[in-house]
Length: 87
Length: 137
Image 1 (cartoon, helix red, strand yellow):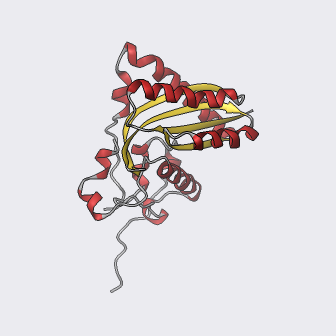
Image 2: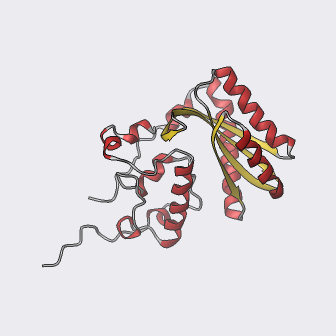
Image 3: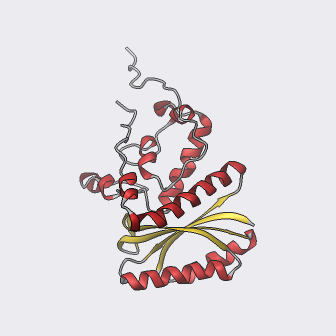
């Protein structure tokens, strides 16, 4: 049997909330589209539409440059729970 | 004139007064080049997501301003010369949608600048519990 689909296709949360602009300084809001290792979550898992996924991607990259969100998280950093430090 | 936003991170090893002074220097760079500062927003001392020049922390400030597009290169050049400045991020607000967002942000920053002395409301705002769990189950 082929591997079962783990994630359900979802509607776009940003479209539902009618988001026009995402602020890169709002780290709590960005968490939704980041994996636990701070990778950008793909569209097929979050259900974001193309337009909002593009916005999210640029915003996350800005936040990374501003040292608000890490580029990479090593095993050591995962242990110390990086998100609490970022508060 | 175009709307811009600069996030600057100042070295944490300075004292509080020195930080304020260096922030003043940074803002002067913008005003002396013909920029008009609309609002500033102190995010305060924060932990950096990754060390920059072996610093684990930094003092964040956001400056909203409008300036001529040609001036930005000069401003950034000056910023690079400043050794107290760990990192800066310049964001351009160009399209109509972005400009309205910029106006909103300026309004919010101004409100925040006035509020904290009267009441500690913004602190409550900054810690919303509506942290939606990641979609992955």
